[in-house]
Image 1 (cartoon, rainbow, N blue to C red):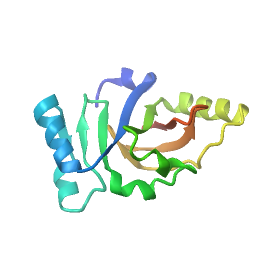
Image 2: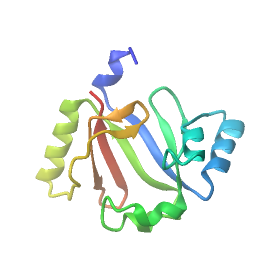
Image 3: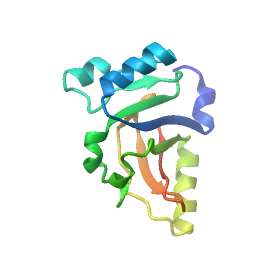
Image 4: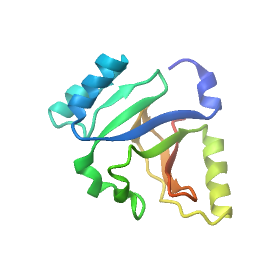
Length: 146
């Protein structure tokens, strides 16, 4: 991606949607909504844990099989979100904003996960990411690519 403006402002990276059948869901989003499937072939042959559909060059929707709910252990209680339409929202930030967000959350005693590396997202592998929960129980992931 050559547009450097996207690296210097907050962007929506991906939303994870619980679906019964990811292949059927991808077909719906491709045919009815007009979104391009991502990693659908890789998922179909067992090489990717879930497929996605592309909203634009910066944003995808991950089609997470509800059968994988028990594996959603990034935060206590995350598996209980299965059956709800959205599992978590991911915010893609420039590195300095990522660090500032983590510091602000720590200052407010918000529980955070450890930092993960090379997590797949809309723009490939993210350098760093972590998860947190808002006061209403909504789960967020913050990440940066640069």
